[in-house]
Image 1 (cartoon, helix red, strand yellow):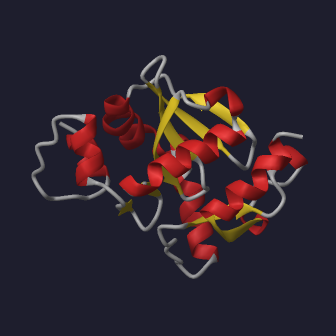
Image 2 (cartoon, rainbow, N blue to C red):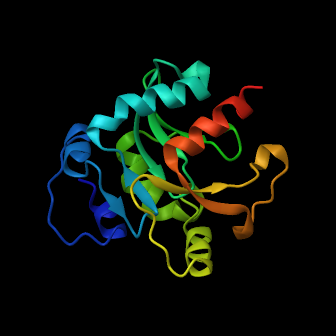
Length: 175
């Protein structure tokens, strides 16, 4: 299972991952494609469930956060539908991907990474920043969030600590 995901991240190991739980154990804390997409460390997941729940109150207690991308967008399983939700601090919006965990990783990411991970935009941002590779706790956050009329351009992005970025966005989204 997860063959398409492994091919997309250029993992040549022959892994026989059979479940969501096994996927999260195998990829615990891993970063893929120079920081494009990352899986949270197991010990950080509860903290991120709380951060996302406080930022998006209807999600409190109903999600299991598992990963995030270079823009600080967090991905979680919505317990009520078993689908992956994407929480965007830069837009202040949450989206249901309509994919379960397996299909999100094995279908959506490999075939639709231009949209779900903004991979082309990431490469543009990296080139403008000397091919910088984001560390595990960093993201490229909006200086002026899009929900406050910020522009969706590379010049409006800065390297931010993920937790600080979300803590700053939280009260702005909940005004």
